[in-house]
Image (cartoon, rainbow, N blue to C red; front, side, top):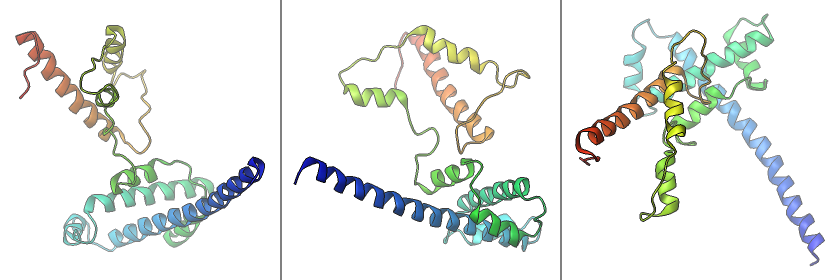
Length: 203
């Protein structure tokens, strides 16, 4: 077979998978929205204050944490529909509109996918460990002091009125700050060990 004919064959296969991807992703997105609204309506039927206990009783079927991510997606979808179609008020109609509309933000869906294990959770990527894997165990990684101290200067402005921070997709402020706090505490412990002993003492 000539290269040009092979190219057309491979291209046709790519187009077929493109069509399949679009179709399957739409169905997957709609299923996610459906689940999100069903969980939201289930919560509406429970007496105020009893929802957490109800979730714990259902934990063998789905974790309470995962349900919360679904509900977050439903609440965001309601906001999208209300911005586009403010006349819609009923939850059932908001649900149907959310199934068909183009999502205005991927944050809720990305957060859900992270929680369900379809994407890496925020904070799992470690640049240093990645570099070590590339170098192998014998390589040495060097850091430029200016590049390290610069981000620390930025962190000193958390909470300042004139500074806004763009959080990663699918991560809210609390999740982001918790991850930053964990990494800073680990780094600070090493800094203190080096100051005290001249090196890091592994424990």
